Amino acid sequence: MAPTVWYHVKSLDDARRFYRDTLDFEETAVDFQERWSHLRRGAMEIGLAEGDPRDDGVVAHIDVDDLKAEADRLREVGVEVGVVVEIPQGVMRLLDVYDPDGNRIQLAQEL
Figure 1 (cartoon, rainbow, N blue to C red):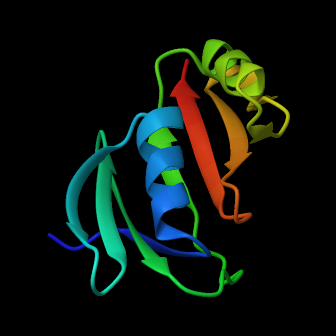
Figure 2 (figure 1 turned 180 degrees about the horizontal axis):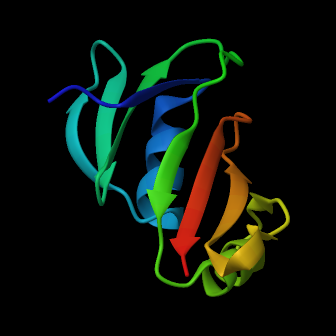
């Protein structure tokens, strides 16, 4: 199955490390010669391709069990994290997180 979202990154090695070690993605495939990687966390599959990062509006959406705890953990390790937003009537919490190349990832917790 092809990744749902593709991000271009300056350094494939740095991006792979960030997504695996910081955001807890599992790498499912990598091609060091062609400079791409496929990763998965839950139902979200992303692809990383080495190249010039671009803002083409794609956003990976990742479900988490405790958004506030995840936000605190990411801040502690120096990740650029937005503000936790709670949708009225206590339906969902959302949080934007940015990888080192400025790609946006949205974490979500259903309440």
